Image (cartoon, rainbow over all chains, first blue to last red; front, side, top):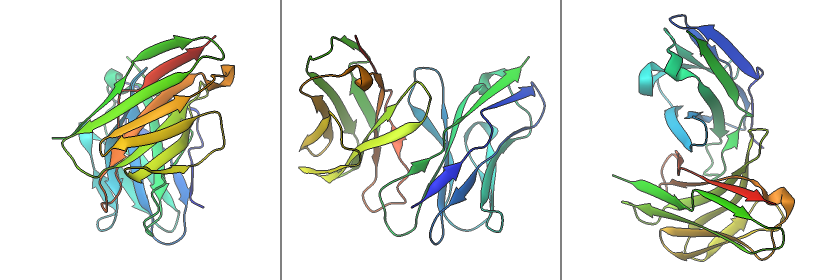
Length: 114
Length: 113
């Protein structure tokens, strides 16, 4: 079964500094990988996904993620964090065999300090 | 463009009372539909998913049930709520046969007292 690990409960970063949120995955075959963001009392918003092709994926709000097959990682990055990026971030994976289920990580709380 | 609606936004119910949460999707046809619960500890738990009218897969045995009476309508129900049913309930949809990017609704905050 597929699974995702997000090892850090909280990531603190100063405004303007680079932001990285870590994600490693386990899946049979090639993965489909996703990042979502959740603001308080709101639904999850889709940020970006990796299906195939270029390992660097660009998404919404200036975020990008790098797929690394050898390290089974899909870390989310932003070159310069904004206070408004403070939110809960989820990594998710599904397998390539048409399984409808996404496996979500437990989420990372990002706090951007002004 | 596609939109997904959930109601109500918040709900406070006594233990033992029934529950009905509704989710509807606009701007697409034959979507895959999902119900998740997010407990206070933040993790997402898949409860049910549906690939078509009347087709429901249950992921976790529990006090809840789901139904899909129409193509773009997904309902989460309970006959008798438990305290442990409290949480944030999220509905999501994805395209049938696509890469299964799931798009989430705004959620319903359920408190069982």
